[in-house]
Amino acid sequence: MKLIKKFNVALLGVFLITSCSVTENTEKHCPEDGCLLVRENPNDRFIEEAEESNLESEFEGLEIANEFPYPPEGQSYLKEGLIPRPKKIFSSEGSEDVEVRRLGEIYWIYLESLPSKTWPLMKDYFFENNYELSFEDPEKGEIQAAKDSNKVIVVLEHGIKNNSSEIYLFNEDKTSKDLVDFEDMASYLSENLPGYQGDSIAAQGLNLNKKARIVYVKKEIGIEFKLPFDRTWSAISRAIDKAGYEVSDRNRELKYIQINIEQENSGWLNNLFSFANSQRYCPEEGCLIDGDENVEADYELIFTESEGGTLLEFKRLSNTEVTVDQLVDEINESLS
Image (cartoon, rainbow, N blue to C red; front, side):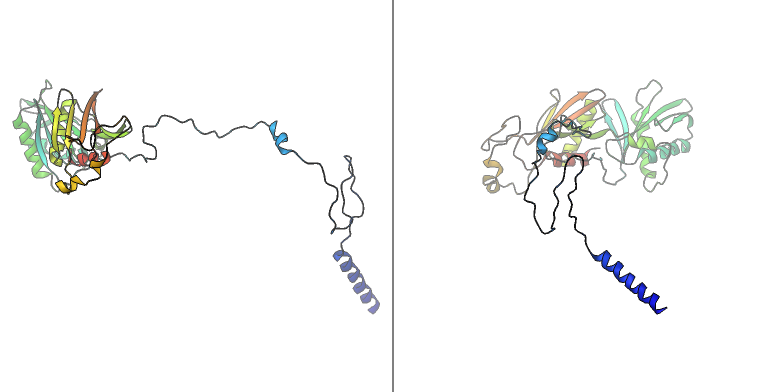
């Protein structure tokens, strides 16, 4: 028994010594292509060198497939380096004003409330005044009602500003109702709008049909109106007055308005040493004015009629520090 144990220990020792030893390859490896260099001693270095591999010539004959090409460079309407502005939302001041407005022979009721909220309130007016509704389409914003021989067609639209509505009242022949009818409905809306909680799900599509949006025109921002020129001219003129800008020149036939923007600290001493008066304003199309000349206007607002709407562009005329973006934002807040 002791002899077997000694034999096993000896066998284990031989196995460990064999596994820990490293046998050096003393023969050359000779495949079909020829013998390869072999180190007799791992600490030695090769004296002979293999042939140089010319990788450039090897890759010249390879075909390269461009699976993910860069898209072609298209025409950009933005100035290089500018981040596109998000679409402007024409916000209201949070009031609930109701007004009757007129342009020529057309009247309408303006109120600062979404069409989806105005729709049920408008129907309440007809029910309380004993009108019978013969037709209603909240998706189009149209109601036809009658009381005795008085028939009325009502059209509800989204206003220029967000959170605003416009109501038009027509006779059967599509002519505008008299001012008395508008004043009667406006009086009811003005009295009941504050705190009114009604909202029509069916009329919520009208909330998206805004009449103005920000667009890019010749690398600058402008405003596109879904309104005829006369209505757009009136809205912009009212916004300019509300914003407190001075109109230096306007021409309805040539479709432009020139305005001056009042600057803070615009005393004669500040103007004398101001940086703006010591340089010329030179946009891409060329220098417009010299710093020593008397500037009559800071901006020119140019109206262009298009299919079913009007485009408003802003052309800078002076070295004013007010940018086009700032001017558009100010006019946005003043639109109604």
